[in-house]
Amino acid sequence: MGRMEDVTFGRLGLDLVLRALPVMGSLPQETGMSRWIPCALAMALLAPVGYSAPVAVKPKKKSVEDMVIEANRKISAPRPLAKKLPLTAIEGSRVKVFREARKSVVYISSAALVQDVKTRDFLLVPAGSGTGFVWDEAGHVVTNLHVLMVKDDQGNIRPAADLAVTLADGKTYKTKLIGVSTAYDVAVLQVFAPLKDMRPLPMGSSGDLVVGQSVLAIGNPFGLDHTLTQGIVSALGRQLRTLFDTTVPEVIQTDAAINPGNSGGPLLDSGGRLTGMNTAIAPATGASVGIGFAIPADILRRVVPILIQKGYLERPHLGFEGASPVVAQKLGVQRGVVVSEVEAGGPAAQAGLQGLKKDEAGKAILGDVIVGYQGQRVDTPLQLWSMLEQDLPGATLVFDVVREGKLVKVTIKPGKSKPKAEKPTV
Image (cartoon, rainbow, N blue to C red; front, top):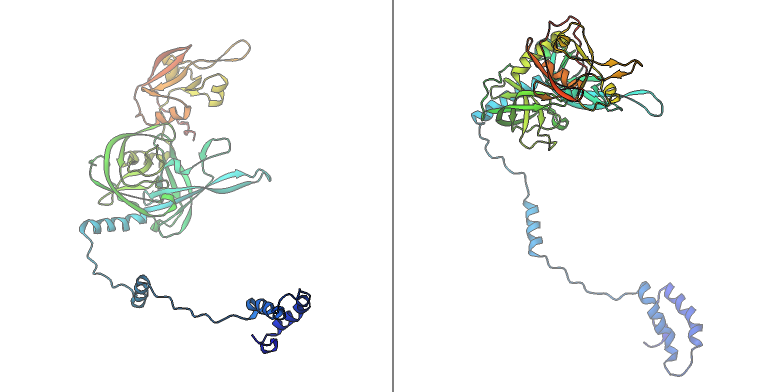
């Protein structure tokens, strides 16, 4: 560096130097280099602001991996199709069965009537969904009764307030519940759709099924409509406990995947015939683990026509009535059916069954409590009434009864059903 005026600065740099000169001039003059301090300081101040020495940057060498990626990007193109092989005979048969059967499988949606806490208004809210299938040419659809049930605020189970059925073509129609059986967990709907669009499934028999044969399940698991799963008949003759505390006999066990939403859908044989109605999965799982159950078609063939004709399965006439669970609890009974009234001269009276009595103060005195029926445990009135639906007319019925703290058996021979036979309470 020579003289300060030989150095070229920017406008900003010059301002900084001029401001620094008075300060530098006041520094001690102990060395001969003190006159160059202002210039050196200015250069240091200017370096990060407007001055930088050129630096040579070496280009980064591409790695082998980067070169491979770059080369592959240049040649990327859609892959050519491989030659498609024709479907096997089994696959072709399965495809045909599904294409035909799906026209008969429907999607069932329901709503619950709830009361708004603030406004006290009643509102319809989505309650659930399930599957059903067309039963006949008259527009009837069959499904599980539990598919249509909802729980109210008090925990009572009752049919949904609003039902709708969506056919395979995507059109939705109003429907009405016309028949129920708590004994078999079966319900029948009348769908108000064009009959030409309601295609019933070919009817098959569950009596000729064999363990190991192929079966197909169609349903709406998790709301995914018209889902097909395949499996085999894993076992026959199982007993299925329903949500209504009844036991359905001769149930089909299958490993075809059945999940929530499949309930009420058809179980088909390899020819597309109805062999059962998918109803439940292994209770400990809540999802498919290869153990599902279907109500056999032979039970449906017997029960559904009666439900269409009468709306319910007629119970044998026994001549007694059971008290409600509320009354039973007030009487200190936690399990079983409290016999409230016995018809004079009826089958139950002739068998010696005893109802409630009253003391001098008018207070109810407990009579008989039914705790068993035909060797099966009885917990609630609904369970007993449902069990009675399963017995053939004329059968002799044996009840386990608690009377004055002792267990006794009462055998009742049913009488002729009365015209005013009550519809089972749901």
